[in-house]
Length: 538
Image (tube, rainbow, N blue to C red; front, side, top):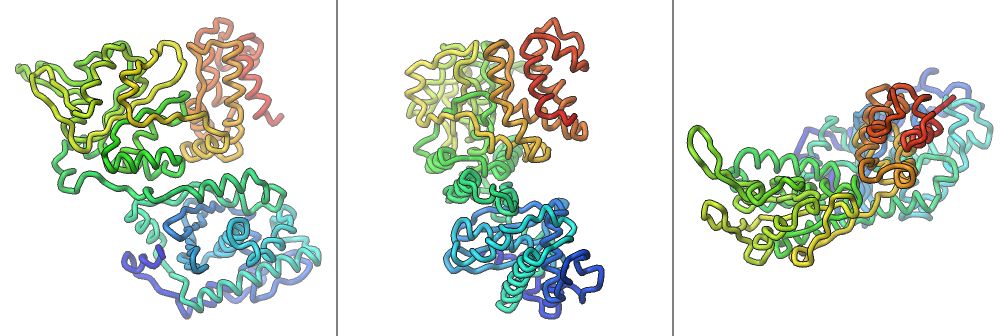
């Protein structure tokens, strides 16, 4: 199991004997350790478990998970510090815990894991525990008070079962007491990070949403992804990387970091492309779809998964062949040939990314034919014949149907080996991305994401699709501004959302005057009205 490897990274103690009582029960309970206001007095044997379960509704715990080979790794964090990790090994139903003994958060983590296992794998084994938790309404007991006899019996039974399970894990040497960052170091060594899937959204609620098909399906899709290529598989050796120009070495590190941060948002088409690019027989691809759906991020993640540097060019009418391949320039009084970004990637190996390629004139697209043919070569203006490095990869992206774009000719299309269409992201995935990128709270992010379709419909009906656009990038800017303004969503929208729509609206005189904006008749007024309606608490 993954956590067993921690023994070689930091000093540890396995099932620490003299601390075992403290791990399970805490210190000998005093009046301060007993939950006050209950109908019945908490038993000494399960007071730590009961207190931990109550505190999970008072503290802002975050529970995350990731899948590694045949195991699922869970973690519970408080104030950005992880207190416990739990690894569940699917084939033999074994668990291994690593963490800080003094924290009571082990109990909400255990409960969350068992609820997850009930929903996904072990219905019969954990049904009693699940049903006991499901029948409680912890929102009425946030301070651990006012239990009636039936509710107290349920929370007491849950606490007893979790305490017994933890004791059994200790007896079977399944507990590692660790320095707090040991697991982080191990994950980094494995090129892994914890998933940003917040499990308490699915498994800590006592309402009907605990069993909804929508939530369960979303989590199942996350777990059932093929993770055979999640670890970074560098195409360059360490020695080869040292021979690259320094700026390309930095690019490799940036791409790998981006991949590790975003791999949970990739889909099977992306992982299939990584496999193909790793083998090398397939080396060109096109991502196409609406703006703001992550096309550029995906291509950079593919580069990161393969340990490749990257250079990017954004398509425009101003691009000529010299912009791509190189030209003579005057430097220090001498005329020298300076390679363009595409020539550099062919020469050294790496991912060349041509964003919005359908903004480029057709004769420039035609100049790519030699590169995209099987020979993968180009005659440069200095007479050099440059043959593509074995690790050269070519990626392009384009937005479909926007003003100023060209139809791609069939000759070019036929030379692109993989073509991947990206659809508009669902609200759930946009919400996850907004939270991850901005640290805005989940509820606010979900409301922002749910408004995007309405915003775009307004632009399509009474706005101007040629000059006005609101996409996921705009929502992320809105969320970041909201965090900067201490949660003032409406004021944050003025310089992020409304400003996108008001540039050509002469009726809007002052972007600070919400009432004046709403008194106009354009798209900005309609969008402003939606935002105020959604986020006004008056």
